[in-house]
Amino acid sequence: MRANKTLLRSLLYAGSTVYMKGISLFMVPLVVSYLQPEQYGRLEYIGSFAILLSVIVAYGLEDTLYRYACSSASKLRAKTMASRIFGLVILISLIFFALFSLLIPFYAEFINISPYLCLLLILSLSFEGLIAVPLGWMRINDRFISYCSLNIGRATLQALLTLYLLSRGHGLAGVFEASCLTTVLTGMICLFIQKKDTGCTLSLRHSYVFIKYASPIVAGGLLAFCLNGFDRWMIAETASLTDLAIYAVTCKFALALTIAMQPYGMWWSPTRFSLLDTSNKHQKATKFALLGIYQVLLFSIGIASLAPLLIIYLFDSEFIACISMLTPLLAAYAIKESAEFLNIGCYTTHSTTSQMKVMFISAVAGVLAMFVLAPMFSLIGIILSLLIAQTTRTVLLYIYSQRQVNLDIAYGRMILLLVSSYVGIYVANQVFISELTTNIHEDKLSLIIKTCLVTIFLAATASIVFLVLFYKQLGICISHRSSENEYAHMLIFHFSSIKLIERVKKRTNKYKRGLA
Image (tube, rainbow, N blue to C red):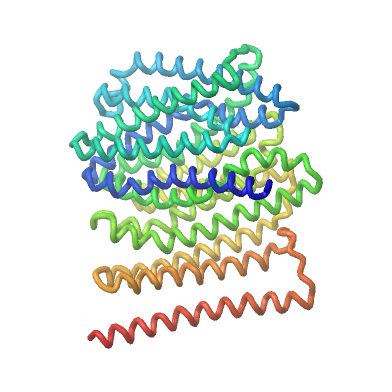
């Protein structure tokens, strides 16, 4: 009974998260159909400023809540810490709104939007902190019904309002109005729930402790803007808003990897602290970190294989260029996600300066690469810069983390696995793109079948290699006698999938010759 309840809770968390993030991805082709590519590019350009400001107003207090509430000795102590953090969130939100309201004329002129849109943007950002901390508290206390209801309700309402306002001809203003209305409504509900549950107190002494802990996280977030925001600025300066729209749509598909990893990441964020307090902590941390990286690899394969179909059939011809950029951009996102599972030790201390140092070095590497590569290679130069920056960040986080928590992961094997996997994905993707663009107007069913078979084949290959390299760390005990049988079964499955693909291809060609 307890296991069923845990499973149900996990499914609800995962479902609400995938729904909330997935519906934003689902909305992309619909929003693009109402806006010109230049308008969508401007929307992304304005959104990059929102990313920068959201780091300031949130001030890393959700991570601070996980650190101090999860590690509290009693529930009463955890509730007290949550109350003090929430009080600090309200104070920061009020200061942010008051300060930036006075700067609306300057800010609106700087990003080239109307004061009305600027006000909507600032109002929405002011409520983001009031939403993040209460949702984090719900996750800590396993209040999955409230958590799921708020997330699903907010995503649904915003999507419906956006479509309605766009259909009424509101354009960019409609997107901002829908976002502002849903954010303010959700923020007021979260404010009421949190105040009723933990109350709201403000302790100057503890606020200083929270700010001191969160400041490196905020600094790291500002540096992270160089990799998720500044790239939009560089494209707007070196290319055009249409190119920015193409890059943004490609990022949306790559973001599907982050969406797919949200359920496991939600479980991992608070669990990694309590995991280190158990026996065999290093073995358990290694096992769950490897399982996270394995999921990143599988989801990357699925997205790289299926996204070209969606791009061709759902978007206008201007966005066909997204297909060729998807795989390298997806690799950058995969490296970023993998770093979250390799980084455990950096969060075990009461200082977060190591994250700030890592983000500073990787941000500098990324920005310098953008200044060099963007004028030479345009969008591809930006993607290569992101790959350089995310690889630098992952390696440094791994080094810092290993000093605190020694994970039994052979880094050379991990590099071999990821590089070989993404080279295989890229080659298969390029071959498939050639056939897909050639047969774009005919035999869609066979293209879909081939896509699914290629996805299964690549996933099976990656799974076999992963198990061979890391079966010991995963705790899989295989005797000498059974190991031969295990590998034989894996190889039989692997090569039978190849034969299945060839058989379907032959039958498809035979069917085409019969029609001819």
